[in-house]
Length: 369
Image (cartoon, rainbow, N blue to C red; front, side, top):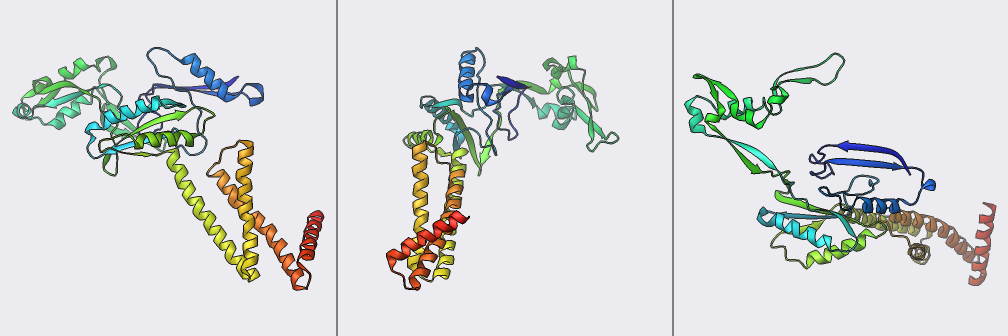
């Protein structure tokens, strides 16, 4: 059932990437035509079952989202001016999501456990040799990323290439950091004379929004379950939880839906208002205008009725745009219907007879079309 396989190995997080910091590899499968395999949801369920319980790794099975990237379905953004309890609160929220039905693939957003080596320069001792912290940083680059000497642009290339000086690969070790020497007025001095190397906890990426430290706890939703239903449960649980001064908000898909809903509501209201103005200018009678616009209400009721009967979800964007487009269609049909009726009444025809004649004319026009 697999057509192509794509793999990527190595740390992929940071830099605004949607992939988490602790991801060490990604495997993507392209399935064959849907007619030649079982449903994708069933395949994903089989993959989760087959990869469950592998020691030493956490495996997440998901489908690439269509359209602009919005991240996982559930995204709880926690922010605070004082980050003292932020990590602990993020862990508690992740545990709360873990016991919420239909919530899968939880990421607590906390820094990846690790160690950074911190080189502390004793400025007093370094000053005795006439050496500053900048000189130490220069020689340390020989072991790490390399000391940039110049750059070179090959013929026919648009970008230049850095020329860096580094120690041989076998010499790029922690032990070599203690053996590095800095040239001073007194000669070559080992940096171990005034530099102390200490391990510290890795901080990872620190995110700030509007000046406040922020952690985003993310999770997915089981296939076939409406995201909005799960999001409402999480909102209720978060509202009842004492955060100790830490603010929370749902972002990602929930935020995008709220913004799209607000925009489409304004667009629908503006469209109805403009239609009302045009109809009033055309008919010059409120009764005819309200009769035409009543069809918009009926068509919208029909949309919701159809969704209920077919068991389809209400999409904020697609269904919303469809409702607005449908309003234009039914208004156009009713303009012809009401205008024909008004014309027949103006010619002196009785109401009931005018209604029958109008329906007959409209049916004839549609048959000819």
